[in-house]
Length: 71
Image 1 (cartoon, helix red, strand yellow):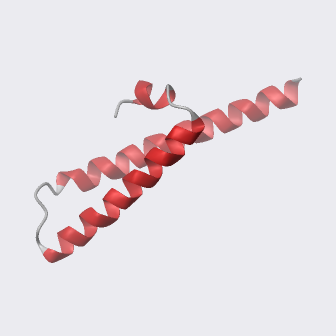
Image 2: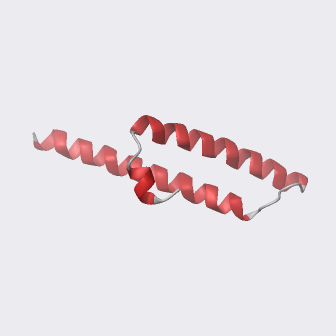
Image 3: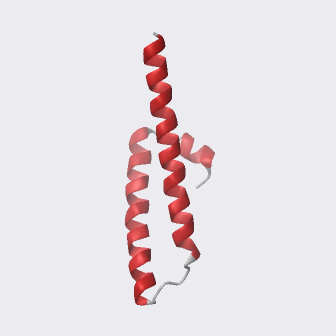
């Protein structure tokens, strides 16, 4: 998922997407330990997507806080 796609999501959608990615990451780690993982690179990409989502959430929250403080 690209950064622009993430920025176009609502806060609820971002939280939901983060939860889905965390579940996927958990499952990927379990498969890695059992040796049944098809694409180990997916773990890295899932972690990066989670980080992107968390970054955008923080940006939106700090932006909303700044707007509230200035008004």
